[in-house]
Amino acid sequence: MTDPSPQPTAGTSRRSVAIIGGGFTGLTAARRLALTGHDVTVYEAGSEVGGLAASTEIAGIHLEKAYHFVYKTDEHTFALLDELGIRDQLEFHLNSSCTVIDNVVYPMSTPLDLLKFSPLKFHNRVRAGVSALYLQFVKDWDKLTEITAIDWLNKYAGKEVTSVVWEPLLRGKFDQYYDQVTMAWLWGRFKQRADSRSKGEAYERLGYLNDGFDSITDALVRDIEASGGSLRLNTRIDRIVEVNGRPHVSIAESSEAHDAVLMTVPSHVAGKLIETARDDAPDYFDQLEAVDYLDAAILLFVTDKPISSYYWHNMNNPDAAFVAFLGLSALVGTENTGGKYVYYAGDYIPPEHEYMSMTEDELRDRWFAELRKVWPLFSPDDVIDSKVYRFRNAQHVVDIGFEEKLADHQTPMPGVFLANFSQIFPMDRGTNYAIRDGEKLAAQIASSF
Ligand SMILES: Cc1cc2nc3c(=O)[nH]c(=O)nc-3n(C[C@H](O)[C@H](O)[C@H](O)COP(=O)(O)OP(=O)(O)OC[C@H]3O[C@@H](n4cnc5c(N)ncnc54)[C@H](O)[C@@H]3O)c2cc1C
Image (cartoon, rainbow, N blue to C red):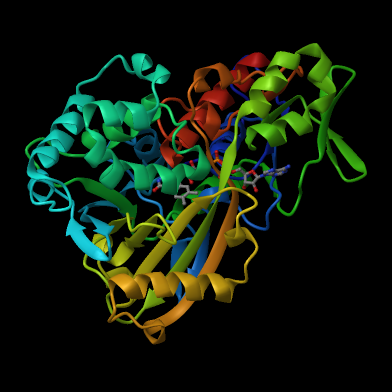
């Protein structure tokens, strides 16, 4: 546990900072600013902290609402866990992956699995491996910003590999935008996964916190509050306006003055919040509004019997109901879940998609039916409990020209800053980068006083 010392750093005076959004970025920034002696208020629209990485309780188990794990390269997460005194909760486990095609499960954890992957002709299995290996040695990723992932894959991995392996995944992750995604983003994903493999080990290792990700948010909140900071849940900020050179945040009819504001909300939401600054820098607003987002639907359920022995299942069935199926218990075991098995199914969809409006029962029935096509022995009667979650703005669309959409952290409104996951490029969004940017913005804000 940290020993919070809410004294302003030498040479600075105590300032008032508003953090909009209580996800990993907002809480990390809030903690750092509170620990350095500033007066911090976190405004969170939802009824709990954690944002996309928020936790829940199901069948008596603390779990993330959406599947979350830690990469071996998540150095900012490690540093934070050390500071919070909870690094010992993080354990790395061998990842087992597979790809499901036409309801058949094909192992896909090691290079040998790829060589045995019968949906591809043998020479294309080799080509798939060589193209993936080649990407791991690419350093100047900026050359990849000009080509779409689909075009690059068709050219280097070949048409069969692309249509069987990659296109279903890109469609699942980016829906209608699948053929616009830049190769630079896919390179970032490859790099992250390749770096997560230890030298000489065929398998990748993924990390998980024994008590779940809410042990991080709990510890962040504890430090924020112990340093005099406050958290205002169920408080959606509607507007930020500048009055006499100070940003004021508005909630319904009331307005509160601060010395600085950090927005950790999606780009288009940020644009609406600081709308009154539009005329000062219309280009900045164009950047914010050019970022498209997809939503996510997640089915979390707990069973008393195992369904599959793999953690990560790429669902490459034609017209699959969801893109990913995850068996957390295959990764971490069942010791911490009282012998019960934890599963997630997830899909990324546009905001108007039926998954965002259908009833929980409808979604559950449809997705359980999809699972039964692959695992006929699975019965919904084995499910002890299940929950459906829908997240707005869960993934930004990293399309060609995305680097032009990267907005500065300093917004055109004095004292108002922005840090959201669309500003992480070319790497994919993740809690590690949320922590990195939370720390970075805390330092930037503190040095702006
Ligand atoms: C399905 C899924 C799986 C994932 N898996 C992983 C994984 O395995 N590993 C990993 O590291 N990362 C994973 N991520 C990504 C990770 O969850 C995010 O990168 C990270 O949580 C982003 O944190 P954030 O604070 O930047 O944003 P968010 O979590 O989106 O937080 C923003 C907060 O702002 C609040 N807010 C919005 N508007 C307002 C307003 N007007 N007023 C007040 N509050 C507002 C929101 O309610 C939210 O709580 C996954 C994400 C998803 C969706």
